[in-house]
Every structure is written in C-alpha cells, then in structure tokens.
Length: 191
Image 1 (cartoon, rainbow, N blue to C red):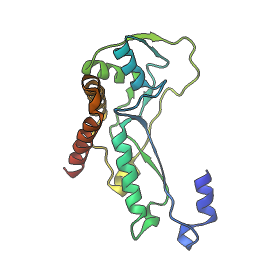
Image 2: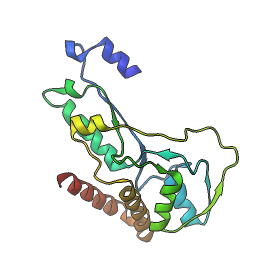
Image 3: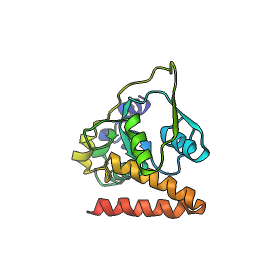
Image 4: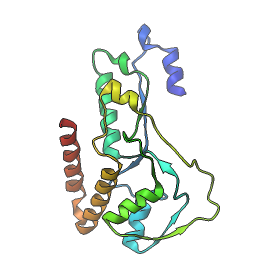
C-alpha cells in the first residue's frame, strides 16, 4: 500500500518519480536457512539432532519455490527497471512456481524424507489459525518478463535436501555447495 501510494503521488509516467516495482514470492526454501518455526530448517534439526518435529498443518498447500527462483525474478525485474523503458515493469509482480500441482506440507516432508531420512513427527493440537491453501499466479511474470523457474517443486526439494545433506557431511562446504547450485540454476536459464 505504501509503494502504491507513493507511485500514485509521484507517477513515473509523468516524470515525477522513479519507476517502482514490487515482487512477492511463494514459500521459499533452499539451503542455508536456519530459522525457527520453518518447515525445512525444523526438518533438518529434527533429523540431525534427533528431535521430534512438530507439524501444525500437514495438509496445508503452499507455493514452494527455491530461493534462487526468487532472486532470479528480482534480478530480471531490476534489470528492466534499469533499462531504457523502466515503466514497463513498474508494478506489482507475483513470482511463484510454474506447475499447477499444489504440494502440501506433508508432500514436501515426504520428498525430503525420500532424499534423506524421516524425522520423528508429532502433530500440534489446536494450532493457531492459518490458511489451508496458498497459491501465486505468476503467469504475468512468465509472459511479460520471460521469467520461468528452472526447477519444479520436486527438484527444489531435492536440491534443498542435497544442500543440507552435503553441508552436514562437509561442514565447511556451504560456499562451494551454494555456488554449485547457482551454477546449476544459471545453466538451466541458458537452456
């Protein structure tokens, strides 16, 4: 709302302000996230420390995507904002997974477990209310920016599991693992 108000007060189209774009992504996963109360970091801690993992809404669906997909989208938008026609992208963008299939928390845990191991699970009684289904329509970004996520949800989960597995096998390797995944993403863009 603040960005939209600023844009209305100082419209770029009238030469009164800079071109401004906003972008939002789906549920971001990928290696290196150690936050509390997030699905993948909680999974990793449960597996590696023998903890019980508590689930709030196992059947909730989310638009899961890799952090590199969102960074890629941000960079595409930024490049356009710095181009000769920045007004073309001066709006709000959704950056989400391309596939139509909705993956639940349970689905993602099954995929992580297949690539690693299954943690001990417990289900929270009476969790705080939370949306059962979230989705993003990023068709405008695909059509107008030619932005397409390189990896589908199953590949995203596999890459995420691989990052953490490799990190725990070789604790000093976070940089090398991350750079290898960035190279894989960049190769996918060029295909």
